[in-house]
Length: 72
Image (cartoon, rainbow, N blue to C red):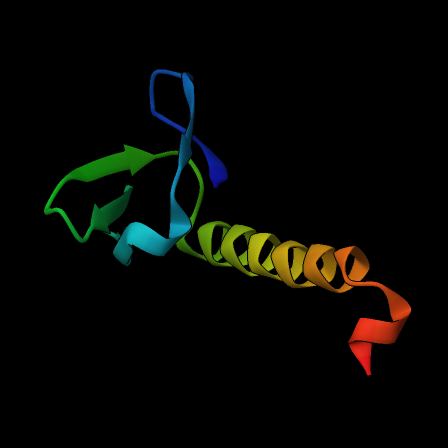
């Protein structure tokens, strides 16, 4: 999950795996696979960076969780 900010300053967590696309029109609109859309303060690039960091953390946590013998 990544944290984003709505235009009214409320924070929410969204499932980055459910994002279909992100566009700037000029507001940043996140469209989900369900068809729902939200407008957020973060830029398209910021959303992309948040998703990349989140996915890197998942992979890193998986490698840490596995013991040294399992990593080979």
